[in-house]
Image 1 (cartoon, helix red, strand yellow):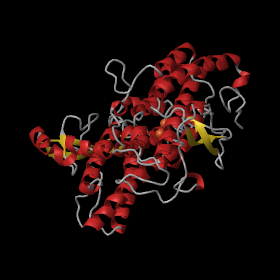
Image 2: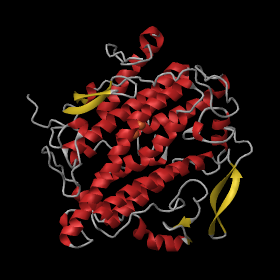
Image 3: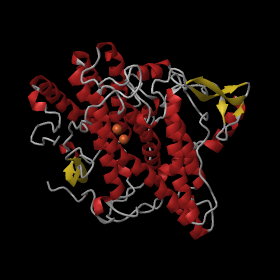
Image 4: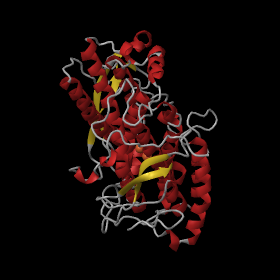
Length: 475
Ligand SMILES: [Fe+2]
Ligand SMILES: [Fe+2]
């Protein structure tokens, strides 16, 4: 399973043995590069960036680090190793060997799943393309670019599946992935959160913490798929995703740490005049990004989700760890819904509630993240706790979309919600204030006023390492 780096498209799928596929992907490659140059990180394409590149797919040491100019990054096709004779672990085909080819009747459904996942990858690169201009440090700039090139690679991962298994309509879908645009009115990205702006670095850290975490759960459930190439693709993507989550969690954690430091130093909880971001503002950003990300899991009750599961296409998070029949025909699950002005739990068929089951895994994971931020606050001796809003808060999809739920989980009237919205979500003034802090800091080892330095550098390098070389480029 070693990676062939001599090929034009690095891969561990023996691409050279399949001339037709190789040619099709080599035709897609320049279109991808055009897209990257036009919509990838703005302004840094010729700079040397200290990036990691995948060199193998095994758990130990899959990455090497070195300076790369982003357009020369070796995007490629990497699948996790075969896990022996994998059987399908759930649904009506449980116990049968995993599919190496797509079962005919699942083609359209599977293509939809792959396209929806694939569409988020270039979307986030587009959303983040202007952030380099206002980086809080070279360390953070490098992390942004690492996330961006890997989202580009995730696009490659999905495009490979489309080209290799879906024939002509797969190729058309692969082209369309380069044509939709985040935030476009005519041809937007498929999912709502991927059409929102990522206007500042606090939003970027929130996005990588909360929205990339949705990606983790979607990929993990596709990693259980009975369609083996999809499962193995997603398994390798998850190893890359872990870094994106690290960037988000530690990014927000460092903002929190800096705020606490300023609070202690100046004996105030209003740190904005000292160049920090108030904890109350951070809480509002959490409310925004968390609620947008919850919608990505879809409706609480979904026949699509049930069908994906029964057909063996998309499992649960860590499917083998669930102690049940892995078919769920008889099981029930409690789902929250509004009823006569209150939020009640109703028992529903588990098969229909799989989106909610996945969302609950996500919620617990997100809670653990918030708890780690609160530990930073406690250790600083500050009396404040961040918290996740209720899952019904500000939802646009599912059971709560037609009611107004406060972060504490009370249903209120539209008027009350509107009157109090500024208590819960970032106001224009707060967004503008956060925006005003976004001044580039580009000397090695220096950090913007609103964020603490990280505890350690990347790949054992010192914190003042030159993660991105910004010295004048020789003519
Ligand atoms: Fe991704
Ligand atoms: Fe990601």
